[in-house]
Image (cartoon, rainbow over all chains, first blue to last red; front, side, top):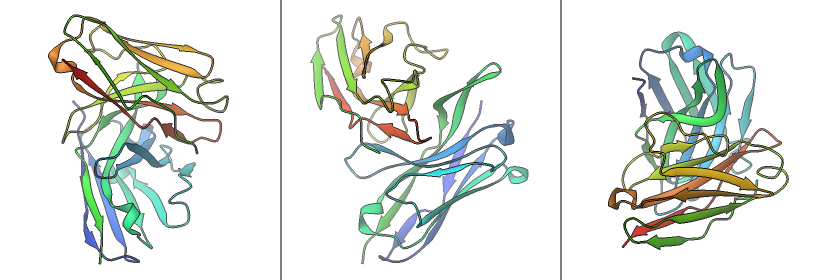
Length: 123
Length: 110
């Protein structure tokens, strides 16, 4: 069974930076698109960014473009999210997730998800 | 990247059926079969229950079904059980290679 574990969250002041990591258990990590999502306290889910298996394509939500950077290291089976110029509205639990593939066909859904890491932006 | 529209809450008694709607636009739901549904209970990560409008991953009971008409997707849960009490989110891939979510629907099993 595939497991994803996020780390790197914490308390940071507005304007500060953090780097989130997501490490995968044994599976063909490099073959799959990975994504970051977030959920502000008491709010709904929001897609943040996604990256293709070979890092050919990276996409960002309008709310984070220019401030956040997604990257991956397939050799380490790890996904990263660099968060810069943080704002109070970036406070959320950040989840990483893997595109869902059934047999040889991959979809635009995501499964599994990690357990999340909390980022709090406050002075 | 406008959010999809879901009702804030629905409810039903055990054994009944409920349907949760999810309305988007021609840039997402209307022109693509890339709708997914997720179930989330407090303090846990989302659980994936439907992909590509109506497909269920293995392990998801057939009480959960999805459909789409025009710009609106729907999740129907039949034979409600107490463990179905949760938040449900729809999501769609879009024409600009982004993903949008609905605001979530709180299902209360009475």
